[in-house]
Length: 178
Image (tube, rainbow, N blue to C red; front, side, top):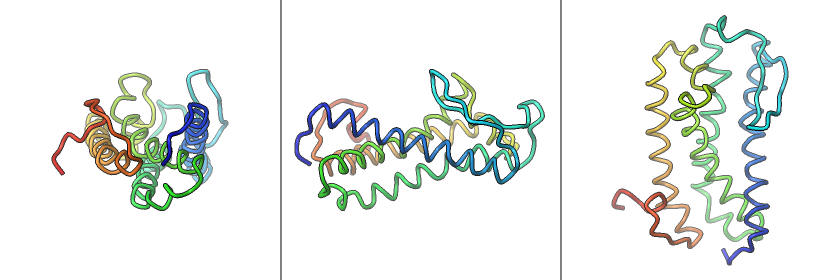
């Protein structure tokens, strides 16, 4: 990919983030509709939220794994699919190529990070998964963190080189030998 202007970088990152949020929150909406749990969608200054009919204290059963967990499963899978076909997108026009770059990153790391760190900060999807699977929160957090680390490594060894991005920053270089 040729060097991008700051404008293209910002616009492409914004578009990719909107696509990611639409898919993530859309899956919460669709699954909550299926179970008759959708109440409304709220836009907060700090993010988006699907509001369910059943209060948190009364939630029980596997359906909460589906409602809370489906988006956290689907988006990393979409990220892996994009990563596996990234060379097809590099040759597209610059804006499309850049959107796919950012979308791959958002898909691969956002939800695993949400599951691993989110419970410390704002609760979130991890607690629905915990309720649906009847497992301790740390199980969801550890699995989310492991997936985050694996996907971070894939970004470092596959995505960045595909876009000819080189860095020595420890967050973005491979931690494991190839």
